[in-house]
Length: 152
Image (cartoon, rainbow, N blue to C red; front, side, top):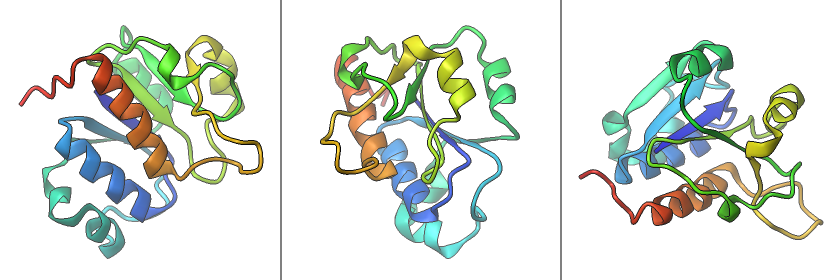
């Protein structure tokens, strides 16, 4: 599987997601600009000693990532759709994309990919779940659908 963080802003979230990626044999893709340095203590602290083990790819922009994987399926996690994350069928090499913590997936990307936008159901009082929690929820559903084949 592949987790994509577009312009992540909070190093702790990225570190937590990185740790989950290591332990599930998932590639973590980061799209610049990053809201922090990959050398910061906070990211390494939240990723613990797993940070050095991450299969990490850093991209200059979203278009560069898409051009590198033209035949791959991309799913876009957003609160601005009704299709539940559990209602789609994930393949082992799919990409699950999350937007910046403060803004989410840009409107133009959501509009161009309406059929592959997914959401995690929640009550209306909050804006969204924490990014690292959301990534774990969707990643584990995708892994469950693929019989937790972690390619160990």
